[in-house]
Image (cartoon, rainbow, N blue to C red; front, side):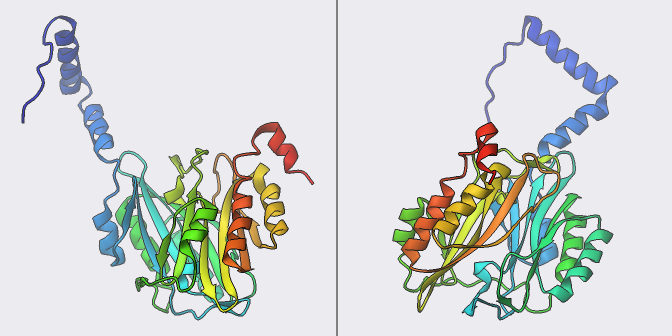
Length: 320
């Protein structure tokens, strides 16, 4: 390996020697700490995969593991609701400086699993940031618990693994991949304006909020950490069903709701997923049934409200 020649003369030499002298004799710990912080920005994914026993996936600086609940037998509005439509627990890990990482995620739980999981999380120092429904008319009842924690990969993963183990029906099985049936994937993607992924007969489209910088727990909460809007389409005998959510600032909430209802798309829930986030984010979960292209047009209309309502004008638009 060859190195470029540096101008080792005059002020450069003096500055270099001064830094070397300070690091060697005055503040050696400071220099080591700075080096550790610089090299510790990336999450140690091997620890996480070893503890959970699953393969994860990198998305930029974020490492994510997923746990689809494939054996719950859920039906929503008398339609089969597979894991890929929104019955998957997920955990995203991101470096937070020094020897720490931040984890954020969403656990998919039956009602009898909620409080045992909460107790295990609290014992390990992980915060519960929200607990609520994402669906209506589902059988059996499903609850969603959002979490956030800070620490090292080993301790966080062991605590979260213990919480996941309250689930007793194939939590750690991986999803299969197959065609999306009679859905016209290209038409839906063209209408929405974003490409998606097909997995288990389901088309999922994720739209990041690249126009926002959301901070929670001292780190930026980007799309891989949960600040995104998404939709999942599945073909049915009557056309298609779609569910998902919108990630919004407060001023966007009612413009999005009005757009959805104009297109006969149902609002299922409206709530926070995080605490201490800046700006404050609100998440709206929706459900639609019918012609896939018509549903996609209605969702695109609602998407177009995102980013339009900041500042005083946006606050006004949010008032009824």
